[in-house]
Image (cartoon, rainbow, N blue to C red; front, top):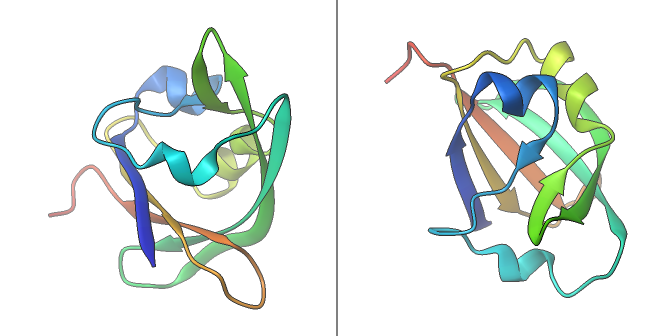
Length: 109
């Protein structure tokens, strides 16, 4: 499993689109691409329990930043994400998906 990024979510991340953090990230694992790519993704709690999925999230470029768009909003809603939660995104090749999100709730340590 290879870490791509970790981000503490804001209200805008949940309601609009998740802008991937350009610093402290291993975004080269998602590049190079032009336009939009589909990322088959599993979403788990910090304890390893599957919350939803597998789902496909679209990653595109917006103003030079990588952004999770289509699929992200539904995933955030279905997983019950809130502002202050932290998500960690990994590249992991298994039978179902190439990527994995892990969630740590804002109140968790």
